[in-house]
Image (cartoon, rainbow, N blue to C red; front, side, top):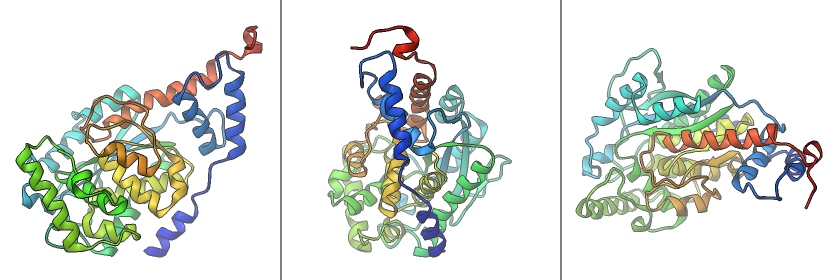
Length: 350
């Protein structure tokens, strides 16, 4: 399994610099002051580098929602019970969640993956990749075995493989799993060196007392498991989550197929940190969608090397921020396709 993952990582190449330069020259010829469209121009250059095309067809786009449960919920770290995870998966499949609404508006499809939900789920649209019925309680021992962590990453890659064969050319990360901000904060703390107090947030909106307890649980999980910060798979297996590992695989899979991948909020960014640690070049294929209201998200994005496109004080997850970011990506593409040049419009250059 490890060799298969290493093979996938080796397929990830640096961006096409000649295509980036072509995009830059095209942007300079458009009827505007240089750089005046800010991040839209950054996105346009990045898309050219990813796809080796000034006008890539990214119309088929999928938000991959990885769902899994967390044994650490036994410690009372969330405002919601663990039963909400399978209930929300069914809501995604019925098209009734926030991410479904925003995906429809953006012309994207939601694909929900059961990678570790603690319930038996059946639905014709569900992608079943269940490896465990939820992770073990990280406050008492490892979340999963090393082999299972690698399997989860490979599962994410395999989902991208299939969707790519179905014609999808742009992906986004989404997740569902009660307790997953606790695991994500633990991953961040280990990988960045930030303290559990700096890495933790209020997740589903817990009160001060439960927040203090959550930080203590994260610290205990790290002390109990002693994950190796230099080994992202070790970190995943000891204090991570199945959906976090799966999303790391989604990111690696997208990058290896030269497809952009839009990163959602805090949990998705923890997965992005794992993917970046496994392969530095993977970061070039990521687009940071938004700045979450989860307090450590900005610092986490900084450590990955991502700059968020939007800031709407959101903290829902699911892929909602990524769905909204699709509109800005389309705007960048329309600028490249439809905007007049100085010559074609008869406009004098500055």
